[in-house]
Image (tube, rainbow, N blue to C red; front, side, top):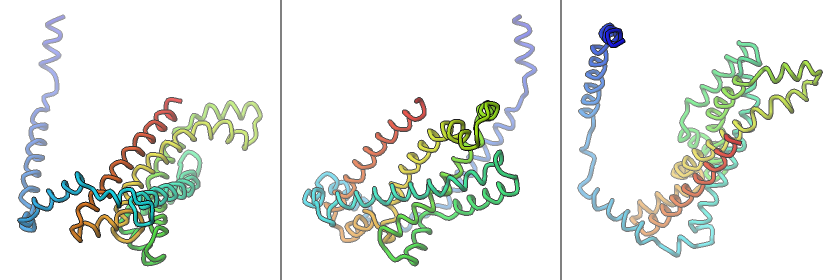
Length: 269
């Protein structure tokens, strides 16, 4: 037995040369990338500014943090949540028919191919660019952020929906068909029970992403808490910036904890 093991070990494919070559190429690319980095733009006051930001987080502006007016952190966080939530809902709704049209197991291949190309085009454009486009169309404000979140959600959510649709257990549908069920009954009892947990989990995951993107979109005037944050930092009001950052961290942690609990519940039942 030991001789067979030794013979099998000696006759194993000796592909260490390829592994070594790949490692050398990767290391070479990393070194080349580091050589292309430019640090001339870093100012001498960068360290001092970082300390000021940390000092602002440690000593936040409590009046701004607990202000209940439209200029307060709580209202801006609520606006950011609403932009992310409504954008996710609208995007998820529009993704459902697009996903069914793009699923190769339900529609003809030419139709599915066209649908996938459309989804690919939507996913190609970054959310920041969509934000700039919608601001030109609708003007600055939360509505531009909502439209941006909706369109960017369609690209990812519809792709995940397609995977869930193509993984449908067709045997259940065949059993319902053999029982003489109508098309509506097959959808109600055979398709929706399989898809709803995946659809809901995907939408919740996308909401987490949209919540972070909505913060960034505020920088271009698409509503949310991003604009006050960049204004406070540009004006060197570090206490206000610290209050906003604390609110963002707490909000993201709470939403992440809740969404994780819901996704685990949907996945495990």
